[in-house]
Picture 1 (spheres, rainbow, N blue to C red):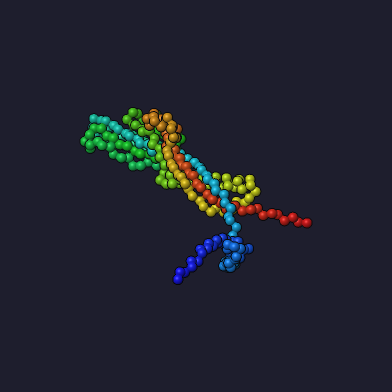
Picture 2 (picture 1 turned 90 degrees about the vertical axis):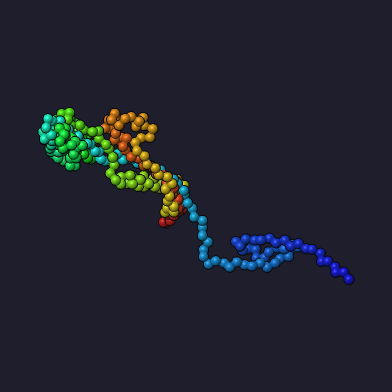
Length: 257
């Protein structure tokens, strides 16, 4: 006795998204329907997609050096070591008194490399200036009043500790402000209101000294003028930020009848 094989049948099912609540059943082949499962309705209101504006901002700031150091070297050669020492001390006292009259603080003179019995004495004084115009006037005055036994070095310009970090912060804040102004103008142009920032990211930062590709920077330091030295010692900082702001629609003003 042979069993009769049941003919194969195919079932086609259409999957509907949950959001389509108007259709409650699944359709089958031949027009038949199969009751579907209903997704329970959420009590929370549907959230509208947030509107955002993405902008970038850049800024570059610079700061000139705020300190300069000058080294004054005094030397004297006499027949006796005591006379050489006396001559050096007399010149150092004159230099120190002149600087203090100008309100400049002076470090204690440093002894030179001469031996105690040598007939040649050397001393040096390190002077730190915060006013570069006063520095030039004092150096010119000392050169005129003293002879060739007093040598004044070229000024070395530098920044106080923490100046570079402060310059970095200024560049970042300026870049953020530029990005905010750009986003504000964009929203005003399209009739929207700029909301709160959602993301603030600093993408790039860099610092450098002097001017990039400046032919003067390749010259010898002694051949530069004071203004060129200040320019070469000027610090620069640049920052680039990326900010995402929320965008709000403008409220319509009610007309009063």
